[in-house]
Length: 585
Image (cartoon, rainbow, N blue to C red; front, side, top):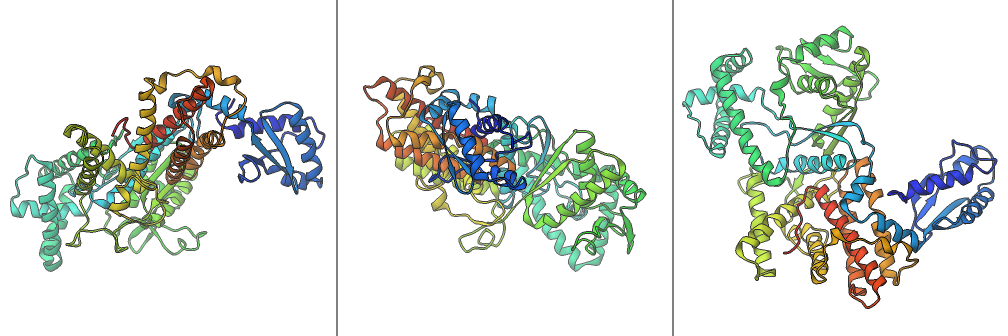
């Protein structure tokens, strides 16, 4: 029995097809999930294959159906015009599949994604130092974390890189203000970063009003870039305290990185990029700046990709090109995934085009590069979410508010819990609600941030899914059983389900591999969210219709198997999305 029933079907259809004269090894039945009215799976590949051979698809589909039926496979098969094969799962197939795949370890042992055995660098979060993280940093962190977990689960070799913004023109302004004000660094990262934000805003105003101040800021930046000891020390202190502030958020959100290689790491590597791009005539001097044009592209043939400014300074493009080279040569990346907002789409499209031409010219291995872009978090008014003062909401403030609201909800719903338990549950529910609200949206669009929908036990929310998990744990506790230790081997000979709701739940469970595949192929976590919500709803219908504790031993065991598989799937799915789960709440 295969984890992917599509793979199982494909294998057996091909075996049957090769016994018929019209088919050869190039035939692909193209198995897909079917419309429920026609069955569970459909073979779509006969029409295209037989059309090329000018054969009647209906005739050969009938012969394939007869062969498939003769071999006693675990599907009912029928032919639909003009030549589709429809497959309906037999109950015994569903039960055997569930017996084999109903635990998290069995899923991971069987699942391989398109990234299996490949080295994948995923670039996400990437805040700027000297600033506190705000709501605008939420999506990259949450989406990136979910994707790296999914890819790792599918046996990809994942390298998590936090490409922080720790080098650039803003440091000239900051250095000027720190020296002018004689600011003394606090040991408290939060206090320091708040003070630095204020100093930076003061410096912005000063440089806009006073040309001498702007010149001073530029001088401080040049001194930093040239390695001035005092400026390097101040810059290092800023970045150290910034990272401590970031790490507080990351620990709370369950996010870890393998590398934190910011822009500064590549500052001495950009000259090689310039040299190679010019050597292979990919970059040209235009008005004193070094740029790349892509004449074959409708927009980029005139819209230059600026990789070195006219004053000789590097920029995002410079360091991003150097970063791509480092990831391929030093980290052995075969795939690179960038998780940023949609406003950077042009930048990454130009970056990917430039990398491909550059690597091809020099002879470097060309990685697959993906821009996982996302929309904006909006407030109730449909505008980017901000404070009443018009500033971005601090991410720490947002998380605290989510936990506070979850605590109020838990206090009302479960007054019997101790205060420590309420706080622990509130942390899981509150943070989970924020993550899930974000991940359940189609990432390429904007979405409205609504507290009442997010912290709610009804609808497609984290609290609803967490409660579904808690309810299943309660079933096993009541029977004094532990789901992870149950052995259902004796059910492999059971031929049928006893109710339609049992069968409906089993059919929903066997879709898990296909949903994982879709989620990873499209790099869109909302597909998994949608499936988990549907699964929880299907389980609820089963639970309301069918008692788990019954006199018939085999019926009870089948129902416990369904409970166990649902529990494993919901917990595995939420963990892959970056959420913690609970056994009681």
